[in-house]
Image (tube, rainbow, N blue to C red):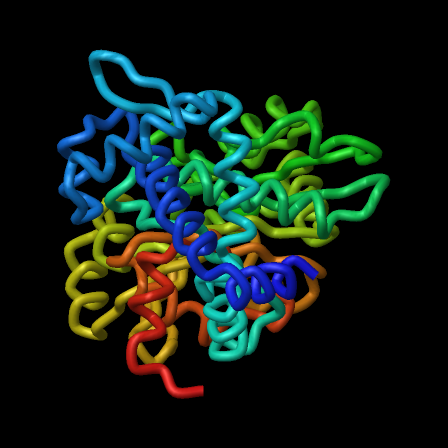
Length: 346
């Protein structure tokens, strides 16, 4: 319906649509870059300061933007207007078509693309978090829901954006999907699971086991009641939240051995998820022996959300998605999406 209305307006009053596009781009850049000065914004948008001043003065009178010594920012009303407009303009500017293209290309259920590039604009990471929360609100049924959570910097940002609204008519239990002791505390799955539970008013379970374990250590740990019970809950999860990492960066962050680093380089690994390292063809070239959710387990989980953005993540995302189960929702940004879709023929 919304798309039809936009199409009609564009045909009957193209001048109105052009003004809408211009003001949307101004709001989008202020949202992503703010506080930002007029000169910097004019340069970013490739327009004159005089033209930009006319538009921003109008938006200020409408209480959509505010100005200070540090620059222009959106007001609270302005942020609400921007988010509503962003949804509408996504249809007009072809974002929804890109989402369909990516979902078809990866043969997954759905794809969501948020505006911008998370490597260039800090606000985009927040938008990935918002999109994840909205997706969960849409996908999760009422009643009891176990959500298995992976670690990482992206997942930590996702946790920050969750609110108690997600618990309306739901009892949420967050569980770490895999062992994670060994990483920085703030990005361990245990920490992120706990943060998500706190922000949503849900419950949390812990999995205090090392990230990397030997075969001798692995089997006895599985018999520990606390470990066994948490892992059992992971198998009962209705949803899994995870990110996708650059292979080299992930290997270095985890302090892997020189031999493992050499093997990952030799095998041309480009992406990592769940402790599996993938080459460009999506083949698993290395696997960290970890306690918890395995790649093959994803097929049994009704809802899988993969969250990853940034242009440099495009190759890693594409490599992992060759292994993603069909019920996956990919939540990414324009930076990654545009890079992936270059040269793709559907």
